[in-house]
Length: 248
Image (cartoon, rainbow, N blue to C red; front, side, top):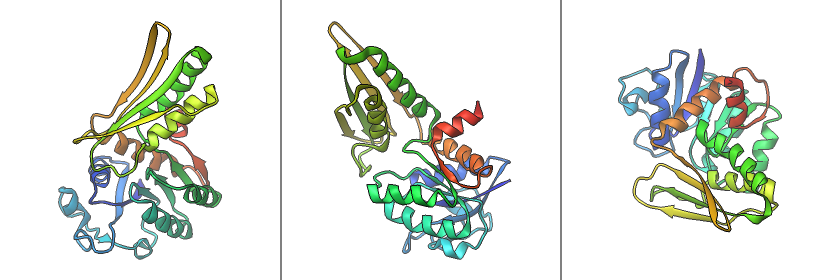
């Protein structure tokens, strides 16, 4: 049984992670966090999820959670993630990080802390998106210098960062083959969960590689798989691709 603590339990991702976790016989929701001042703090986490009381109150400070959890799951803000990361390191908990818009210093901190605890850090936890990273690099390499590339990504209008972490990772994948990061175009409209397209164009033809997330469940399921993966590790920094490789 993997005991997880869900950060941002009342948010879009936190809710889906919690609901899917409650349906997984191999996972126990051992705790939940929200920012200080959130109306969810002090309430039962199960009530927030709409699944009925589970006997775990939502806390505003990870230090108050004791050693209840094996893995912390973070899809929040860079500031909250960094604060929780330090506390998780003290508790020797694994951490799944799907938070985006992290600056270079914060990413460096994740690398440093991973020497002491196991961390899965990925801008996108879905299986399909991680396969797209690999395929985009392969296609860029095969097409060579005669084909230019650009990336188009679309998300809901409440997403704060642009371009998305997934689009940046796709840019890195293409850059690995072509030596330069392609232009990235961001769209923020309506309730789009997440669309990413890499366009390769040459004279007379083009190839488009697209991943569309139909719901946040793809990311939530990946985060839970990553949590299970971390229980087999003592320390180290891993990507979602490592989790997928183990799944086979």
